[in-house]
Image (cartoon, rainbow, N blue to C red; front, side, top):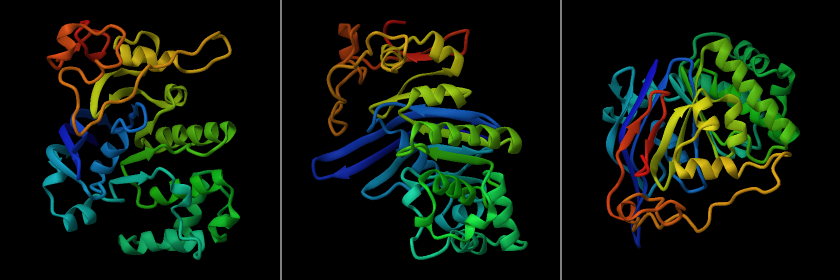
Length: 312
């Protein structure tokens, strides 16, 4: 399995104009790789995930670009073909706020069985649900509970089980630890790491929590205002970041050995009228005149880091 996103642009058409939520993003995911998408709220990272699933909500629209899954452009397929061939079968998603994604009046088992039936699963439905629950370290008897009878962490694991129902090759996890306490967050991250190794499952892990991302990601993309600022191997990004935005984000991670936590001054620009040049120029402590005029090209480094910044 290989996923390639090429020059993806997703705009939301509002009365004030087109909001350029994703504006020329490239990224890749290899078989068995965990790729992290990080950035502030509103940076466009979740929209990238929805675009891969072809579930961008209106008034959003994929304007241009290609999303290649093993060489096939899934954006060129009609909806029926994509749904039958890819959605949930090869690509599945754990949505942000998925803990409230279950229908409250049906038992968890019935909702997972419905997914299996709709997508033509061949086999015993109850056996498959039991197998999925064991896969996410849950007692299969919990599948016969209603959603409100499970804790937040249990519901999140149950939703991950449902996402894995048809053996997808790629799992998109959009803020999978939102609203969970720190201990349960760690448990969910460890579960995803286990699934990644045991199933050779490719994962796109979307979060604003860089501390969590450092535990699971093989490669990281830093997204700001709809564009990739920096990407590279996880150990390079967290040990020797190059882009000012990446440095400030990492410096803002609280830890016991830090006397002060850094902050990024100012606010993200209005994406219906983004600033010329580098989009981070309105908040960057190292801004130069050229940063306000021309968009920087990517520079590749021997350690695998890729940076779009005029400092380099």
